Image 1 (tube, rainbow, N blue to C red):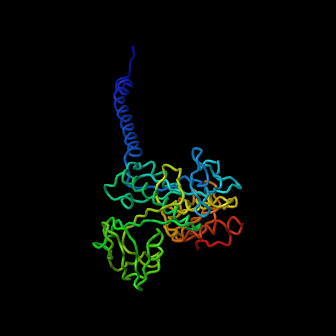
Image 2: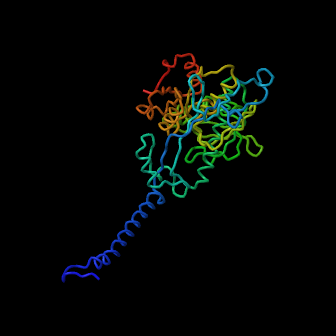
Image 3: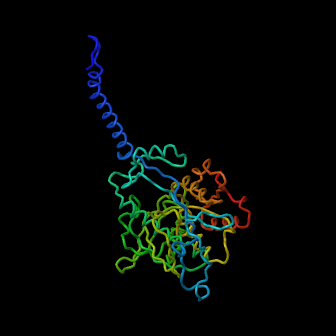
Length: 392
């Protein structure tokens, strides 16, 4: 039996009174932590993050097969096409000293449709100096779905592979006939309401009266780079089996392009003299076109055109061999650097994003077309890369 002095608090009674309060504080703290975890890990935030992605050696192999496979008859000799052997190394293996490579580069994106970011991921990206954070709505319109994005990326990859094949083979002097079909007019262009989807483009007549037969994919693009905006153009088309002429004025090209545009969408069906396939899965977008073209040229010409250098690069490729700008070039340069590239070929139109952001040890060369890109690779192989133009 215990006793106490009158007026002195009973410690057991006080503990009994504090116990529910203590339990409530513990529960409150736990719920607060749980709410914080939900906010950090499950509640999506309206941002998209771009980070350096994997790079791929287009001269290497994937699953034992060349990334770029070429079969058929060489039209210049009439014999089976002669190829340089593909490298046995995996396309994803990092560059080793003295190993010549041509590496296409990518950007890893998180936060898009079907892959929304949480706050914890956003916080990690904030402290990553190589990542870029942008508002979700500035990238994806409301209602955009994952399947729509995936389909668009796959379509752009297929188109880049087609343009890279045509540009590379024509660069090598091979004849690549093609059928060019109109898919419609761009909104607000002078061709709107005049051309129709399915019209086969047979010829373009310029204001001086010269008729240009459209027998190759590159011709419409090459021609329009020489025609001023507002020029009256006559197109000879085949519609439903009937040949007819239609006329309208050309429109201004973009600020970075010369000449003008017809204001129509074109699809091209080339007659390739050889079969070319790309053993690459899970990568979309148009920006590998230039490196695909260089890889095709390397495989179809004797010897290693890189001279043992690891050369990365990016840029879209048009049918007439023009290298176009791409997105995420800063992240792509870091991806190339991390995978061992020594050199980086960048589209001239991306130079403003390159300056001040080149990783140490990576040398960037600006190029505007496939001829310049191939010349740059040859110059690097000769040991004269320091003479090549850079972004200033």
